[in-house]
Amino acid sequence: MRRNFVGIFLLVLLSLTFAAPALATDAADDVAKWNFDVFLNDKKVGKHSFTVSESGGEKQVESEASFKYTVLWIPAYRYQHTAAERWDDQCLVEIDARTNANGERLEVRGQHTGSAFRVVNSDDTRAELPACVMTFAYWNPEFLEQSRLLNPQTGEFVDVTVEKLGTETLEVRGEPVTATRFRLTASEIDMTLWYSPNDEWLALESVAKGGHIIRYKLS
Image (cartoon, rainbow, N blue to C red):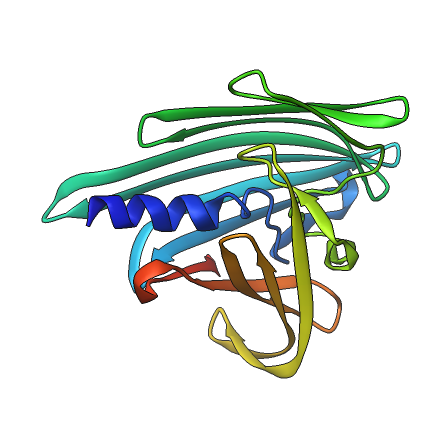
């Protein structure tokens, strides 16, 4: 069970680092704050909170996640993640992400320099990417137009496919909301995303190995 759970979270969480649904904003300070409850199947396993602020045309994104899965009250898996991104328009300028996945420590650092975006990960592997890259930045629907995205947990630049599946009614905090559904797939990732008519990200669901379902719900 422990091995299966580790696999599930590492496959799904690698793409969730900077998800941003519509929740609360402070127009005076150009700051938006969000909080998720995270569930494995129907069991709550943790929270993911973050802040997006804007100043001088740039966005700063700060994220913090903490999950713990227990079996018979015994901790079987722990996950902690903190990250910071800086954006200029639709392009990532800088990233610093740190993860502790049940004792395995991962770090990704990247910065835009001249004609490229350079990335260094935990084992000092270095990569030079195109000058304008995006992460799995769900707060910005422009990411749905991309064919490759930077994974902020592993530092990999992965191929992605996005398919628009139509509209449906989704329950958000107990209220029915008309939402457009998208499917995003990549290597070992298959998830569904919902957006409001105002392009606000509302929900995510992913079916992982063994038929387990991971959900992020607005709290």
